[in-house]
Image 1 (cartoon, rainbow, N blue to C red):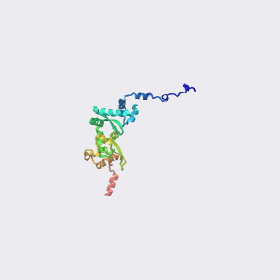
Image 2: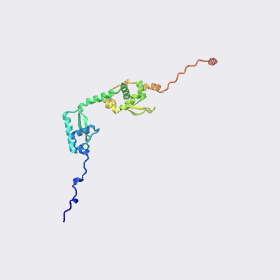
Image 3: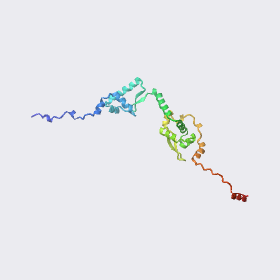
Image 4: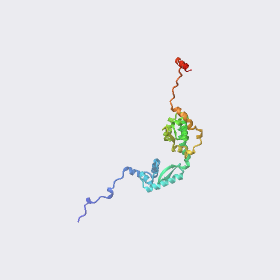
Length: 234
């Protein structure tokens, strides 16, 4: 019996495997630790080692070991940031020892961009909330519509309901306000409320602002008929 011809021999198994894409091959050539740093730098949430392994093109075990090395390296060098494992993933955080510098940068810069009018308006809302725009205007003695829009846009003030009598929108400070002011709750506000006018004292002023002014009617001079009528009454 003759041997099978070469044409009937099956090709090697590796010849049937799909070739890797060019991008995947290039990712495999990237240095592992710098690649991890680059991905973590733009992440807005903690990433687990499996997600990172897929992103950088390295085996998960190698990625997990590299993350631990990076975290230890940052700690040893005393960098201003650290690589922390949280919620089953990894993420960059500023180091706690340098938190005062970060807070000063954020808080000072945020306050510098607020005008005096905005700070005064925000103080009125903080101490008198829930409060409507018209009441804030009455307390400050000026129109605050533009300033209130700015504070709402910036996230310091938010809508909290409606006045049951007038239907006016009521405003209060937000959680962002507490965060930026370094407060845990509104109970930590300084004792300033007693120096603000009471709402009852503002009712007459608010009514005067809402009611249109009646035109003054000059007194009419008395006519001869009026004088005659007056004489008959006497």
